[in-house]
Image: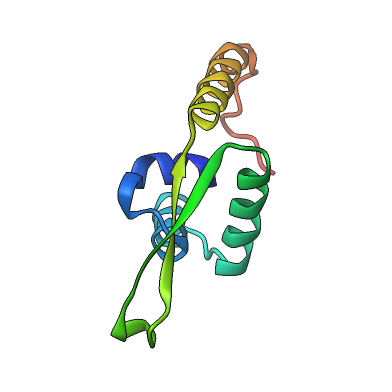
Length: 99
């Protein structure tokens, strides 16, 4: 989901915007530290890369760390989408089921 948020946000993807996008789409609270942990793992796997923006006075002179999906990350997202699309029709109906 973090990778998909990075793809969706494109050039504006940094920790806070990614966290907000996930909260909006899942309607759940998302801990910023968990987003950064996932981003670090995605970067280690080569699915995203990060760059530092310019420092801003609003952030006390700190720079934002922006993330972009790599070609490998896009391929992984497409592969996962294909796998889910293949599996989805085979799921039994969950109507009326409680978790």
